[in-house]
Structures are given as structure tokens and as C-alpha cells.
Image 1 (cartoon, helix red, strand yellow):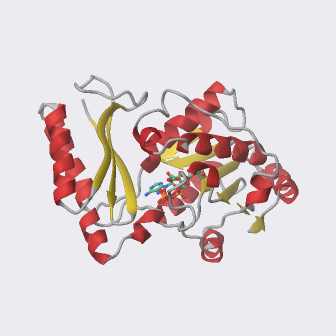
Image 2: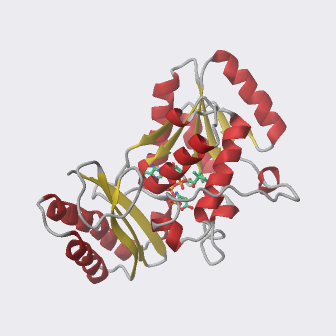
Image 3: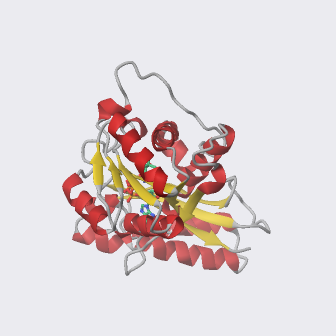
Amino acid sequence: MQTVSTLDPLRSAVAQLRERGPVALVPTMGALHAGHLTLVRKARERVGQQGAVVVSIFVNPLQFGANEDLDAYPKVLERDSELLLAEGVDLLWAPVVEAMYPQGFATSIAVSGVSNGLCGASRPGHFDGVATVVCKLFNQVRPDMALFGEKDWQQLAVIRRMATDLDLAFPAAGQIFGVPTVREADGLAMSSRNAYLDAEQRARAVALPLAMKDAIAAIESGKPIAPTLAGLEAELLAGGFHQIDYAQLCDAASLAPLDTPIPGPMRLLVAARIGPARLIDNMAVTP
Ligand SMILES: Nc1ncnc2c1ncn2[C@@H]1O[C@H](COP(=O)(O)OP(=O)(O)OP(=O)(O)O)[C@@H](O)[C@H]1O
Ligand SMILES: CC(C)(CO)[C@@H](O)C(=O)[O-]
Ligand code: BAL
């Protein structure tokens, strides 16, 4: 596995890999866990042994708000690098901040609509930062395909929208693949931010997927949505979460909020804070 941290060596390395076969990109912020490694394995399945898997690790300052955890975000490049090597990753793109945002950098990509509610409302500017850096990563690597986790469902929708709207070809919007959320044995979605939790908070955090499953069962059995979501919030607050940023039933594709069920795919999305961590999760709701 080759590791590069500036643009010229990245371009040469990718050009060489491209001669062999298709290139898949897995963008991450590092502090890798089994969820990330699943994306890497899915990427390998898609490109085959002749193709190349490129992973980026970049803790993107643009997507963190002023009072968020940019400085605290775990940075463990050496350990991440060993994990990726063991997975047979071909190239690790770990840019320094100056390579990504050189002096004078002044451009931002804003995707409206799908970015506006949910995490876009509780983290103003977050998806502008995500769309901007992902567009840059796509232009830097020019992959044939890219893989993202469904844990960040809204992020995936924003990135697909951006690729469609900007007529991106590498990758085309149809080559942006979502990978189902990988969970701990008790059902908590894996997340680098789970590491912020102490043992008691971690034990309590399982209330999030459990309460979501209860709410989904209620909605699917025809219970009204508003009181069900209020009950979900109350259950989380009683279970050790101290703030619910949102708990919303949405159209799975447009992310429009729903107060009555629709015949098509729906999604329950929740963001809630426990101890120092803001956790997100989402699950399918079947009409
Ligand atoms: N549990 C998971 N299952 C599947 N994909 C995941 C999971 N966690 C993260 N990913 C995906 O990995 C990619 C990189 O995510 P990132 O590095 O931000 O990790 P993270 O664990 O989501 O971190 P954070 O705690 O910051 O949310 C994203 O596409 C994200 O959706
Ligand atoms: C897509 C991403 C790598 C952009 O910084 C980040 O938001 C993440 O890790 O989900
Ligand atoms: N996994 C999403 C990146 C973020 O929370 O900033």
C-alpha cells in the first residue's frame, strides 16, 4: 500500500493504478472501525483483484462548526494505516490541510433541499463542508465509483444530489454506492465518536437503536406518528441522553419530513446527545 499526502504523488499513483482496472474511492475521516473496513471490502468486491481501492483519511475542518469536536476528533493515522494495509488497500490518500485548502481557498459547494433539515439544521454549514471536500476528493482521485455508509443517510443523499447536479463523471451519481450500517453486537451503530463515551454512557447508548426499533414497530402497526416520535424522544431522555437534535420520519429519498405514512420507502432518522457524543442513526420504515 502506498501512502501519499500531497496532490502530485496522488495523481501519479492513481494514474498507475488506473492502468490495471477500475478505481474505487472510500472517503473517511480515519479512526477506522469495522464499519469503515466493510466499505473497503465492498469496494474490493466491486473492483475485483485487478482494480484498485483508494481510501482517503482527512479530518475536514470545513464540516465542523465552531463549537464542535474538530480538535478532539481522534487522529490515529499509523493504526489506521496498518488496518488498511491488512485489508489489501492499494493507496491511502492522507492529505495535509494545506494540500486540501491552500492559501486563498475560497470556494464552497452548497446543496440545498436535501441538506436543509435534520443534521443540516442542527449543524449549520456542515453539509457545505462535506459537499465541498467530497467534490474535491472526487476531482483529485477521479474514481470510477465511491462508497459511503448508510449510517450517514443524509450525507449520502447530499453527495448523490451534488454529483447529479454538477454532472460529475468520476464517479457518476449512479456509481455512488451506499453500504448498510454496521452495528455493534448490541445494535449500536459503529461510529468513531462512540469512543467519546465512558463505560456507563456506552451501555446506555444502546437505548438509541432499541427505542428506534420500538417506534418503527409502532408506526408500521398504524400508530400515529407525532405521539410515537414524542415517545421515542421521552424514552431516550429517560435512558440517559440529554438532548435530542431531531427524531423524524422522512421520505427515504427526498428526506421530506412526514407526519403521515406514504406508500413508498420511509426512513426514521435520529440525532441525540449522550455525554460528550452526538450520535446519529437511521432505519428503514416499511409502508
Ligand atoms: N457503522 C457504519 N456502518 C457503515 N458505514 C459507516 C459506519 N460508520 C461510518 N461509516 C461510513 O464511513 C465513512 C467515513 O465515515 P467517518 O470517517 O465519518 O466515520 P464515522 O464513524 O461515521 O465517524 P463519526 O463518528 O465522525 O460519524 C462514511 O461514508 C460513513 O457513512
Ligand atoms: C464523507 C466524509 C469523509 C467527508 O469528509 C465525512 O463526512 C465522513 O467521514 O463521513
Ligand atoms: N460521518 C459524518 C462526518 C461528521 O460527522 O462530520
